[in-house]
Image (cartoon, rainbow, N blue to C red; front, side, top):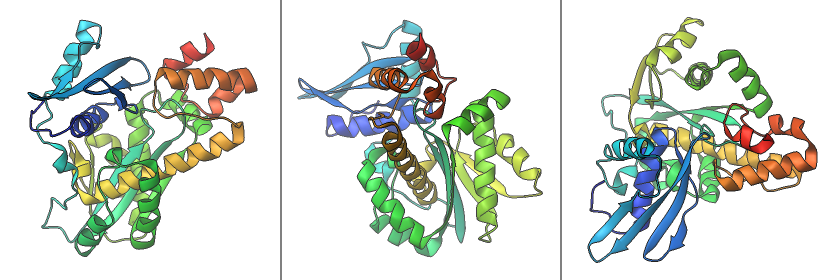
Amino acid sequence: MPQEYKTAMDMLHAVTRTLGHAGWLVGEPRAISYGLQAEVGNGEQKFMIRIYAGKKGVKLDLSQVRPPALRANIEKILGQEAAPPKDAEADLSMPELPSLIGVDESGKGDYLGPLVIAGAHVRREDVADLKKLGVRDSKILTDAQIVSIAARLKKRLAYSVVAINNPRYNELYAKIGNLNQLLGWGHARVIENLLEKVDCDTVLSDKFAHEFMIKRNLMQRGRKITLRQEVRAERNVAVAAASILARAAYVEHMAVLEKEFGMALPKGASGKVIRAAQELVKRHGASALGKVAKLHFKSTQKVLG
């Protein structure tokens, strides 16, 4: 990790983005002596990271990551982080294009709640105004900021949001058996929806899977596009806008589930989430879990075991 971070929170934002691209979700940070700590999970494994800020700068502590093989993997992932938090600022990044469709998803690493894929069509003339609205990677925005910005984006941009609720998600996963294929199907559907509204031939998404998984689904409908996939694609304003629309839909869907089941449903894949799911089963029975959770996560064994 680079050492130019000014605060522990700055480094946490960078770590959150980098781990997020590898399928890990960083939970809410908690203050500790001289820094912060946060739980990280992916539905199957979890560990604690700590960030300390002192006279010698800001440092990341991975001593709590076990076993050694997991720690080595996390060190390898974080070793790819090369830019400080300022690179969360959105930029068009492809100035030769008059417009671009950005696609992103939310809920992939959350045990509870839906999987949401969203797309946004951004024209060159939209970029300055979107920056003024605060469009940036949704992972460094609060839920309240996300919902507020998403409402304004919907008034300005052509967009599409596909929310796969938990019963449907579990049905599709049982049939497909692969999250990347499911994401490819969802991305293709969002792109199809947007192409019905706008004339645009270039799409940008995060590099979550092989390009053919999206193109294969599009080709079934005869759609031909230029698909670009980049690591940390949310630096692009179109993908950042899509990430906000996706997360807002996820947050709103979670609020509906909380009202339906009469209890708090935390985000992520931490021990707190497991305990909430266990309480859900206690109150409403095991059959309720499939209405709220992604059952293929190993968390399900802990909840029902």
